[in-house]
Image (cartoon, rainbow, N blue to C red; front, side, top):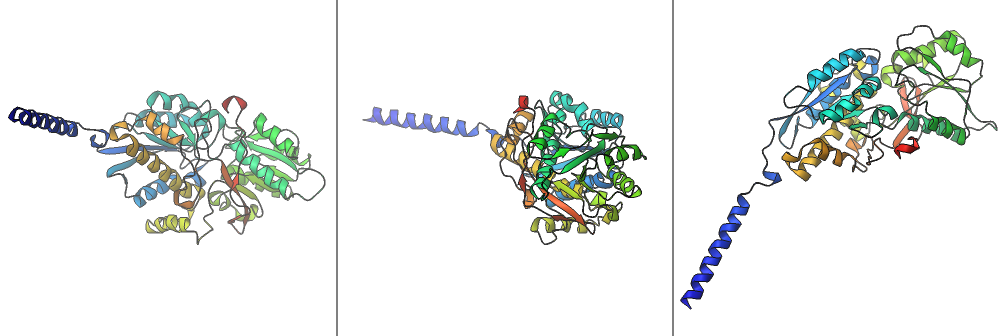
Length: 404
């Protein structure tokens, strides 16, 4: 009996010892937290995009302030560099910023041409980036995710909205004039042209292109006017959009413009030129002043003494991008621990985001194959305000077939 008790006692002691040892082994939750998480913003804050994109920095900083500048107790810092729409500057800044310690794990981007050049570099460096939705920057899928729908998708949705409200027996006719850049041409894909033809919208003539810094586009506009379109469509911003409307007025041509980024930063350049024009984007309007999400954003706008010139779509967008990045980092750490905060795990979280609604201002959905959100809303411009014309719509999926 004494021998049995001794064996039992020894077995219990060994078991408890092993159990204690196992509890001492650090798991993912016990991994050491980093001292800081670095993010980077390399964007056009003062160049041609500046009137709209300029507040992107202020928005990101204000949004992080609203999140206490941290993720799960770890401080977040945003390293900001202004490219002024100079690609060489953007490349130099990228090379500088990736050598910061610790290396940034997410980039905020605003320029499609720069993102196109950096696409492979983000993969090489193990960094994720958010960038406006262009097929060439996002596909084949790498480390760049669109922070709004693809340009063919979103402008296809705008064309569909025009068609849905069209009352004449003939098809609506749209003429295209846009920047001769990767961004300006981003919607001019075979899939876009096939889609608008399928839904009964006629694209008249050839798309007319002009440079970002061109000051005379009268030849392109006269070419389009001869085609007698009902609307003009563009993919431009700020002064690039204003020159279309100014030229039309000088010609005595009263025609509405269909655009993505006819936002407050663009409209404020000459509100009288944009009356009745259409915009489409993935966010609520700053003019919905009683919306809880808009109230939250504007609370920080006022708290930090932001100026009227900073009241643009990109101020709103800086919040939703920031909340998305925070959500992805937090979810990754919750799932994999601090030691699992790496590009593969971040990307795995990104491609499984479903119906994430930061501040109720937009909806983010991503999958392994579709790397851009899929909803947007149509607005019209009256008295300098962007007023909703639709609920949030599901945009068509106009990715090239090889990327579906």
